[in-house]
Length: 154
Image (tube, rainbow, N blue to C red; front, top):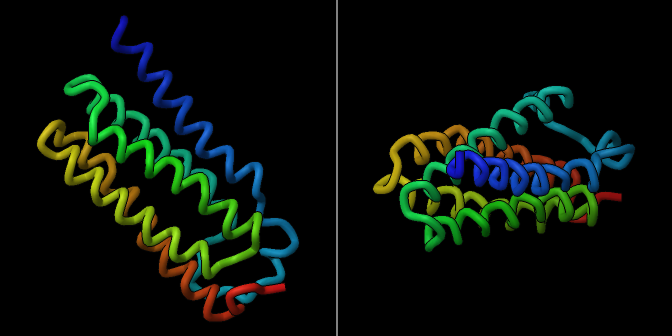
């Protein structure tokens, strides 16, 4: 039972990170932006992120069970902060340019988590692969929207 309580902590950390999407919402500004034809429908983002955050929480917990807190989970914490910051930059500040560069840092932190998790827990590393794929796609979408609308769309 003592191993399961920290899992709730990992879910709480992911829930707090996901809250950035509720705090910094797309709204009318986002609706008015030019978007590529291949952008997924808005309704898809919530369920996709829900699944990803479950994977992220379980992956962190698996690593914690094996090695406790250390470098791998420090990088894990960094990627959570970077994930939170993206919504603030893109929707809060309305800066797709800054959000793109921040997303590049997020991508590196996710890849670093995979590299650090792999020797500890293959399952934890694999749980981060869909996250890396989604953030890769999101990066292309972010860059495309920046190009279509400029760095500071009104």
